[in-house]
Image 1 (cartoon, one colour):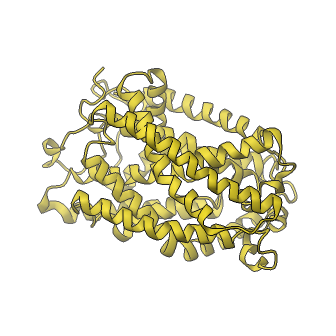
Image 2 (cartoon, rainbow, N blue to C red):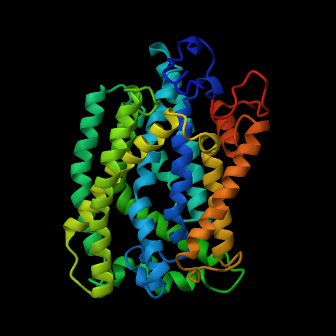
Image 3 (tube, helix red, strand yellow):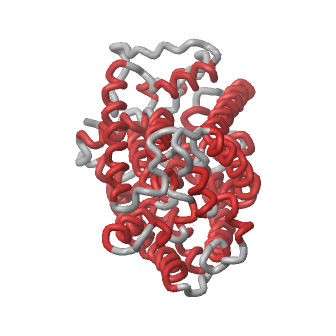
Length: 429
């Protein structure tokens, strides 16, 4: 199987057609595989915020005795997942702009821009609904805001300029993230309850582990906390960081890295360097959390800064590993499953929220604040199975996931056919 076939297409053959969703033949299979990998992986981080107050990410001892499986379950999340999958997702979001914009010649940029802004506006509305009505850990609002603010108009920058912007943003983000990790430590700042009040441990437990069947109290809490979080951190911290990651994704797509068109040795080198270096840096951040939360040591900003620096480095290592396995054909059925999950990423992301909030929130089974590590990893594995089976079976009969289909219909203002046809390429091709 030629994994790179069609990955470098320019889309010129479709430039004179009316705007349309990306066809199966226009997709880069490597992007779908990476997106599926990141979608499944991100639940390994999100599960702790679904199941516990947010503050436990900085003080895992609040979940109970920090030993044995509890310790190594938290360490696995922190070292392997935290911040990495979001970075990969952000790069792939930027990569999507490359494929989307290829459908528009220079004389049709206004048409392309109009569709892009409608697409982002719809994503913003979905994200706000997701954040307010279901779960405050939503990422869709962040992507939509960055997409509306800058992403479309920066897509024509030279590759070197995109990479330069990413580096500059990273130089800003790393020390800021270190300071945030330092001053946000509850053990170090016990008197600054105002800082953590929206997500303080007791406060959040009272809201999300309250009387069984309660829905309104958590909803009002989400509306307040997410709005404050967006206003405080989106413009000044995570917004620029996500934009830098998206521009890096565009640059790597145009260079053929994310589409799998570079030599196998490059991907092997990315994995061999990025993963161990990233783990070493992430370990410094974890050591800072453990020393501060468990031993009461004074936090130092550079540990948090190194943890932030680990995220892009380790993420690129993961990209190299996945694409090296995919390009060599070693992924096999796993690659097909990941590609299916990736093609239905929005549906699967929302499904993860629905399943987990039903398990943990008071309107469902009310398990919030009761399930520690390593049991959380068992729930993650169960949700992964649901994501994979649903995606593989669904895409045998339909072109898009249900959420993707609705998003496309509203973007293009027409009812797109959802049933598969014989001329469409199989999943993962």
